[in-house]
Amino acid sequence: MKIGIVGLGLMGGSLGLALKKISKKYNLLGFDHNPSHTRDALRLKLVDAITEDFQDIKACDVIILTVPVDAIISIAQTLTDISGHCTIIDFGSSKEKISNAIPQTVRKNFVTSHPMTGTEKFGPTAAIEALYDEKTMVICDIEKSGDFQKGVALTIFKDINAKIVFMDAKEHDRHAAFISHMPHAVSYALAKSVMGQEDPKSILALAGGGFKDMSRIAKSSPKMWEDIFRQNKTNLLHSLEHFNKELARCQEFIENEQWDELHDWMAEANSLHDIL
Image (cartoon, rainbow, N blue to C red; front, side, top):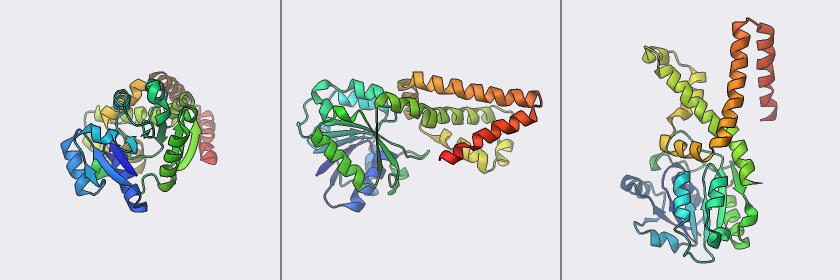
């Protein structure tokens, strides 16, 4: 089976490593607009070969789009001439706009998915062989995908040992705003609040594990997250509104020295770990 991986950064590169490790049944063809990414992908053996001609990607049995969400929508418009048996899988972090933007003539060819994994690093050198191992792979609007394409996608996801969850795209975007998109916004804000101080280097010299954990994802690609924030704007704003209300409650308890109330508020937050 020939698989074309479009986008050879963390997600695409890690997928290549995972597929090359577990099976000889896949031949991986890489495509990326960044020349340094294609060179690194070959050097690191993330794919078997590279092409600069997107027509070669269109001729693959499977096309996997691991590029920013706006680029997924743009590329989808160019795939109307693919084979009826081609399977296209996207790894976008927001799903409703992508799902609705796919041309109807090839909608059954698409399996819209979101791997709930990643790191703050990007580019081919960030690729991790086990990135998808035991991680959740959300498949959205599966009823819009063809039976053949469903089977192909599920086989690939099982081969990389992902845990598969089915969800409506609108529902996915609501949930992703709270557990992924809003935390990224908060992390960026935390980093900005420190960098805006008179002597950020002295502050950072004291930074322990807590600050590093919370600020880590502020290192993520601004281009990628700008696109995600734009696509999931309404849900993101809703989640930020809820976050700001809770932060305001914390501030109010401290200002008014309501220590018992603050303690109870934190204890309620502790209960999250009973669910995780």
